[in-house]
Image (cartoon, rainbow over all chains, first blue to last red; front, side, top):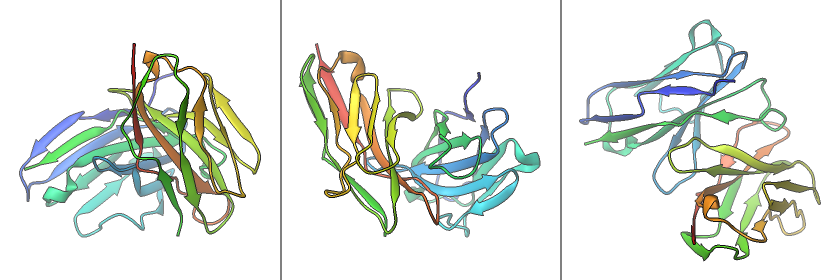
Length: 116
Length: 113
């Protein structure tokens, strides 16, 4: 079974530029998550989708971050414009159902973003 | 609020040593508890979990017991191997309410041969 795919794996941009990350979850997984992992910290949930609807985006900085999950499969996360403090690893995860305590989340390898 | 605190790293041990990584939590409700592991160049993987008090999660020789009285979920392994070198994250999720994973800051473990 293929795992969660993410691209690109690495990205370097200058501040005020825009960037987009792509995630392809495990086939059949209804729930998709985007996390931000700043160096030395644990991952922090940015947004959670159930199929193509948003379940939780309370920690997403909506003035510069946006995410979509068209057709309930792939997802993209965009930052526009980027700030230095956005330098982090962006993780995508998926699970069969909603309710993380009962359904294991499977993580992709992440995209390491460096903003200079 | 809900939070997880792990022991400071990095931790360096010799092969076959005994490992303990401490984890304590604060939760407004009744959480399930997890340990995730991140090997170099790979994504986070679930290592073990426990969903109620006094449950013991175990996998690959690692164990952790859900201690409600001390709000702890310490990770242990009796004899570590070089291949256990990784970053370990303790995490919780509430069974009720906002069901989002809350992670600790991670503990980097290096095992020397």
